[in-house]
Length: 145
Image (tube, rainbow, N blue to C red; front, side, top):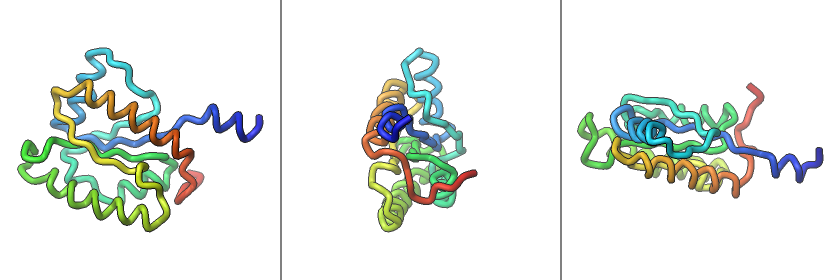
């Protein structure tokens, strides 16, 4: 198989850290509603988007992820009061850190999705898959695990 053929068959691996109360419920609603979702997104449920340690994001990339999504409650609606405000601040720092390491800006994204927004979750998942496909495979930090 040529390099061009293998790139045409390539599907990105995306890790999504989803807040238990909102974005995970949104993903669940998308599934219950039978909305088509990309099969190459792996969801990890976390208590709050504010609990996503930057090391988790780096470890996901190191483990072979081509993209990472952190999804949480809308600002002001966090079940832990201020968790998503921490996420919003960390997002800017992590995004700049990844750009410093040479990652393309679209490989790491943060989204605010409530439990009643199943369609929004599915749309964001497909949009991220399309953006990562356009960027190609992640060659930074990737290790054979």
